[in-house]
Image 1 (cartoon, one colour):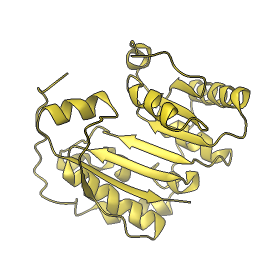
Image 2 (cartoon, one colour):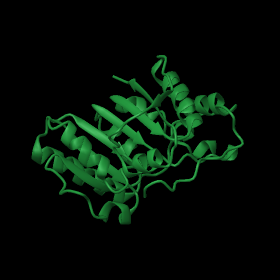
Image 3 (cartoon, rainbow, N blue to C red):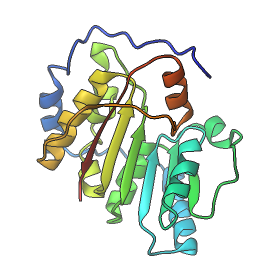
Image 4 (cartoon, rainbow, N blue to C red):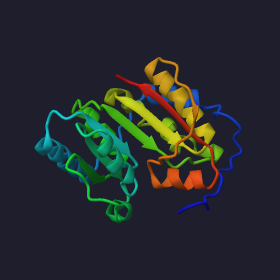
Length: 221
């Protein structure tokens, strides 16, 4: 995966003009799509794994974990926490890892839209919430497919925690920073990010390809 990643091209030259309107619409009208049974089961099994290890362990959500390398790294970096790595792709979840999954982590094959809502419905609060290199959906008409433009986004406030989003598309992070700022009533900044210790395969690939990396962070409590 080293050094061959294409740069993102978009007709947008800054945050989407409709982002604030879309955010307010989603805030006023909660997302009501029916929850699917396989997602209910996946979340129940993941919570049971956390409870079997330590029911009092603070929870970290690695949203869109892909092959789970970031889940492994987070579990090692926060050994007193339990880490949920979530991805909707069976292939990515089952792909070989560089190490065995530690006792304080589990990989979940599920739809994040339901996972976020199921956790919030049970009153579960996150210690940390990572959204690392999500699909940027760079076309102007794809705003509602970006997580900060999705109808489920306001649920993030109910989950709380230190939220961190990273992307190789500056505009995505600028939009996410705006949306997290509205959600938290705090100033959230988009910042250039440099590392010599990539957390995900995509982060490693983008660095090797000469991409700029961007991130934003906020504590939702």
